[in-house]
Amino acid sequence: MTSSQEKPGESFPQLQAIGVLESCFREKFGTPRQPHLVPASTARLRVHQRYNPEHSLAGLAEFSHVWLLFWFHLNTNKTFHPKIHPPRLKGGKIGVFASRSPHRPNPIGLSLAKLEKVEGDTLYLSGIDLIDGTPILDVKPYLAFSDSAAAPLAGWVPDNAFPELEVVLSPRALKDTEKARDLRGLISGALRHDPRNMRDATQMKEGAELEFFLCDREVHFSVTGGTATVSRVEAAVKFEKKFRRKKPEAGKA
Image (cartoon, rainbow, N blue to C red):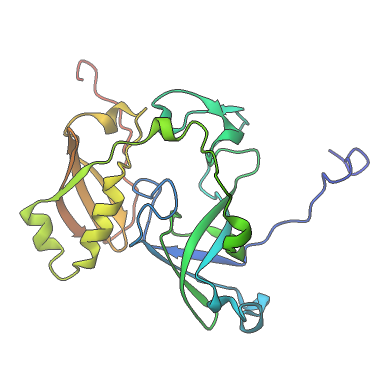
């Protein structure tokens, strides 16, 4: 659309990130679908110097929570779809604006994080649901008196709750995390809410060996019934995403 064709309010200046999030979640698989599902999750946000963090962050440390306005930088969708498949609906569809799907007309997201502290140009956060490398467009303090609605309705979500998994660490996984026991709670929190895509037959196959990157580790697990068993936790030498959607060979289930 040329400038002569633009309607009032449809032309916007280019957005710029104020910083890039350093998150414990290294890929989409295993990252919580909503904030605060994994309270032990952590991240750091260093504000670019051009935004003068010494002054622009003044007073923020007095707040307990912040809104993060961010960019879904890993989106691959090329066209707009008015209806999407939320994982909760197990194959069902809902309007994109009745969901928090990342596949939106503009790939902009909003997430509430707990602000642990502010040191210099860096925000230390927890309870996050964002992947490492996420561009942050803005930070706003959370205000309970205006941001918390009275008697809110949650639409279709309460009737389509995710079943929670029991998480068990094998003797090998316990040994692997002996010197990083805080990691055990983070692993359990991430797996408890079942990171698998219910529309992916490969991931949903009973007992399938799966893995995801978390902090500087690679977590290997499988799900049988309602239990996720962590088989081992290895140091991740290279953060290379595994090919998780490999199609079964002909004649094999």
